[in-house]
Length: 451
Image (cartoon, rainbow, N blue to C red; front, side, top):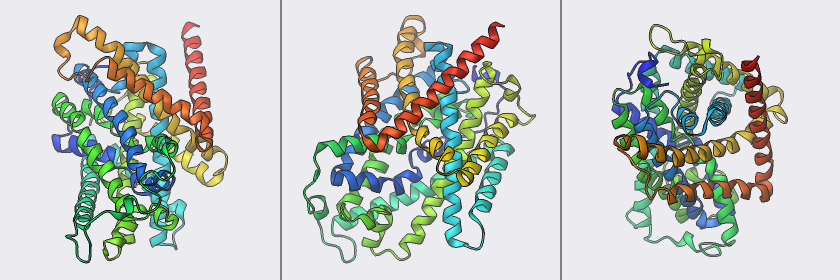
């Protein structure tokens, strides 16, 4: 569905697009979940994040190539449908929607927990409901309101990371008050790779979910004032963003905090700020994490609603969901995605050990499936573009087709590794079940069409 034919408003400016891309990379998982990877791999966790980051960079380059050649609502849902057929498009669109509606629920619950720590007199479910309602309204107002909210959330996250990196670098150089030059923690507790190469590789598997979200910019492109330029700039800048924000900050964590200190690794970034003797470190980092959580909630509602709209436009969801109001807002798609989010939030309180646990354990694997399909689609679509419309290839995937094939092999290796890593096996199994449910849904849809 070409972007020009949808009636969506092109109100997102370049500054919005830049911060949407930046905000998509910096999630709450970086600030909290990275400690688990570090505790497993030691300082070599830097390599774990570098391996996974390299795959994400390659996928983003592929997306940039396709997005500039085919700017469309739903982004890679349309590319996969065009390159691989209806089944691949159906699976890509619904798996991506599924991923983000689960993220919406997770982030609403996480945000409620942070707020409950500050105001314990208010029940967590009340905070959760309020956050869901707030961002439903933000997304219903206009795409500009979503972009503006994301601009400020992302600005806070980027500023926090940049201050963190700058202060950490000064400490390492001995230029911070009370600091001595050097990075002794990198090798002080058993060496740089204290547990060998296997935890580094398993850490790369665990880190995969932290990067997901950078691709939202290719979906937002359909509502950008300058779609081609915005996508070209943001997808090309993903390399330094991954290097600086993820690998740079993880390097500082393992350089300044003992990796084998379990208590400190529960809050790695807070621990670094305590090493730097920054007052109220825990409170400041809680504010940054809350910002990351609200940003993910905001973006999750946006991404899921636009993907659902694209699915409806192609008949993969009820067509009425694709309708826009007079302001160019897909109200039905937003409300439908929000409704599933409310249901998922309810499950987090009513069935935390069963239904909600299944959803949480399955969504990350589903995200990897989406990336694999994107890479396979690029492999095929690029050949078609070179043959039929080479002038559209204004951004090209590096080292095509070999780097694309290497990326596919790397992602398949992650899935294979999940099958043999005990901690990841459940997630893989639940992800496969979720994909199987979507295959059954596709078969039913085909059957109904033939009647």
